[in-house]
Image 1 (cartoon, helix red, strand yellow):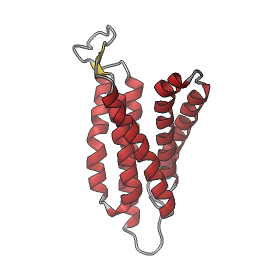
Image 2 (cartoon, helix red, strand yellow; image 1 turned 120 degrees about the vertical axis):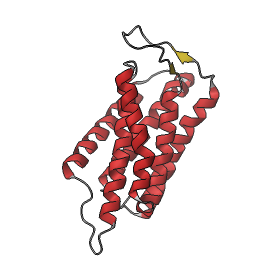
Image 3 (cartoon, one colour; image 1 turned 45 degrees about the vertical axis):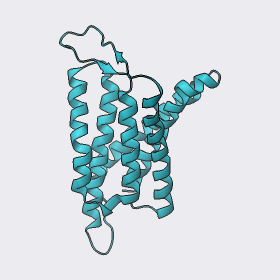
Image 4 (cartoon, helix red, strand yellow; image 1 turned 30 degrees about the vertical axis):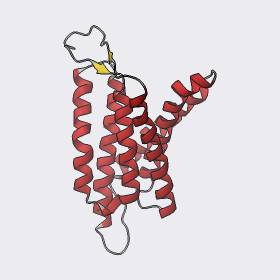
Length: 191
């Protein structure tokens, strides 16, 4: 990230805490398969209930690492860290239609992280002034996507009602998704 150090560390703390919470949810309940709906060609592909927690946890820790390490790590390393999972998520979304939107969202996030890493590394290599990193059109499209996602997930968080149990079961995961959407937006904004 090209922002102030304090902002980078605060973003790292926020996304690491979100990632840690998502990964901690993996230990709370047994990983039971979720039955896939009867879809022609779906085959034996059964999803595990914690697939989203794993993806969001890893994304949170990856965002934290990128916010702190940023351009100190070569862009190619970040590209290899985020590129293959993005491709796997796109292929899984194409293969199994259930939870397709969720997988595609994670794929967009992984591809956005790859794009930011490569763009920031390329811009960091220039001496003197810092040129704009990446393509303004692509950066704008990703800003619009993650800004819209943050607004959507925030509205879902605010519309939730119920007692403490309802907040713990639905509110905290939604708050984690909201914080990671805001974190992605903030990282893109610094490009």
